[in-house]
Length: 276
Image (cartoon, rainbow, N blue to C red; front, side, top):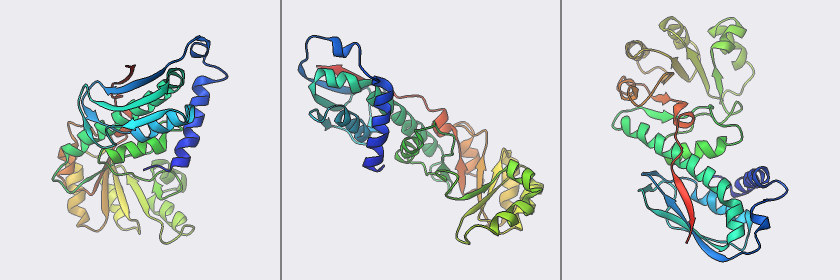
């Protein structure tokens, strides 16, 4: 689970963006009521973000009571009530949009990830996310991937070395890029290098790296790389992967399959809030 203080800080930022100096509609209603609102899922999926939803309402009004009925990672069906909020109707209205945006976005990612994970079930490969995330939402989106059964790749640029095509071009070659970086980083730092063809792959095999990423390889090229590798390096496949072709790649024997589509192509799960 994400750190609660971090969540609260981000939620305060999101609410400030949405409410600004005033909610012109809600603040100008003459009446308020003590009511209960129900959070209802309108399609099947994997729930994610219910604890974050509770933080949104807590920040808006500490007097609100949030009751969780379903938890993160649970399968939900259309019509399921996953939580209720009781208290000031005006306060609930002020937090509604931010709460639903996060809940729908994160549940959509966890639902999408679960589909990818199911596709490669009973293969040795693991599904990884990427850094193709929404600015400001990376921690939330990567958490949603983990809830859906996927694994998090590096969180950001600071937690591992990944030498990609432009790094290689800048350094003057794969060997040069690896050597220059290894001279400066800790010996415990994981190093991954991206290759675009079998010739580059053969070069990378002779270098002191932990993982080789096969970028935009065909299935036939991946099979050949696995054969040449003979379990010397961990192999990752990336590029143009989808639910239709991912199992074929997983069956080649690679260790990891990374896809930005887990996050950037996830459709929001339909979730609503209604006053009883």
